Length: 89
Image 1 (tube, rainbow, N blue to C red):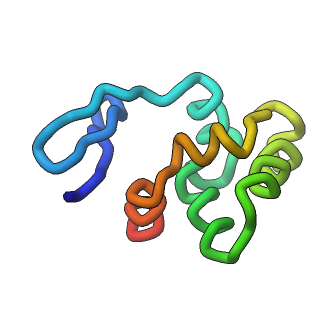
Image 2: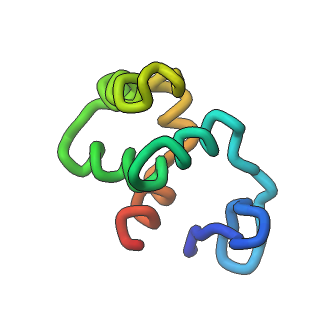
């Protein structure tokens, strides 16, 4: 099963079916403020062994306090399949 993103509305696609889970405004803000997408940012941190809690804190600091999400929120946004997709792009 391949997970990707629909370019027109950025919803998540799995194989040929589409899951209409759109990014939140906070997620979109992080994409704008970070030098990479939030998915790539999180994937890089997780690959280096960083915990979800510390990634949450790093994100807060890197965006000068403009993006404040919990570790649980990041974990729910970026499951294993999504991180693998982000890391492979």
